[in-house]
Length: 263
Image: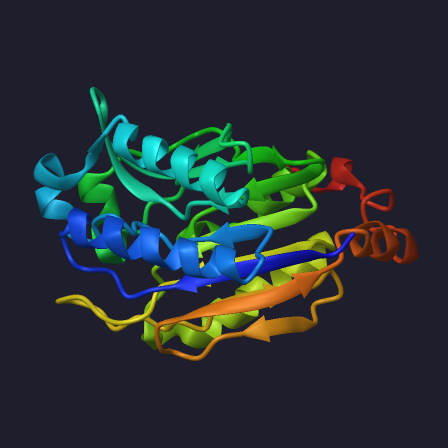
């Protein structure tokens, strides 16, 4: 069973949720018309990194986001891994990923576990603490967000829990594009899964973003890569390749976790 992916590498209107809602509706419709099975969005697509105004612009409990995604996934009969949005809760603000299946049922929710101090996330956001595991159809998936990919222990935890596709929404700056590509390639090779990474394009008052969304197979081969401009990146994958690669080089059964603890 081959799957068609569509990664929406969009510019994000800084601190303007309404403009971003409208763009996402249009882009999801465009991707669905290309017969995508799974559509992926970037990080913080509702607000961008306008973190000092989250009290005004974050989505209370993610309610508007979830309603919109439920309607769009059901309307277009497509799975949506909806990047992440700024969510307002009674305990603070979170950078939260949602996933919906093609019936419009929420499949997953994950709040970014590792906060990036260089973009002041630790000043304005609360860190999540639960793994981002979910299932789309019969596909075991996981989601992490941007800076999370610098922590191999976290992605390995998801792989050990059975995930075969890793989704990575991001707002990764141009200045560290080389890190973005190499970290994603490494995460694919070391866990023998598909890495589906959707970065944003464009800029905000403080950053220029790299784009270069990527789809990488379990051997570490790049299937598709975008440039730096706003685009929809399309790719086709065969999820059965995960089992094939893992059987060829059985890293999970060859692990020696008793050696991996600090003395």
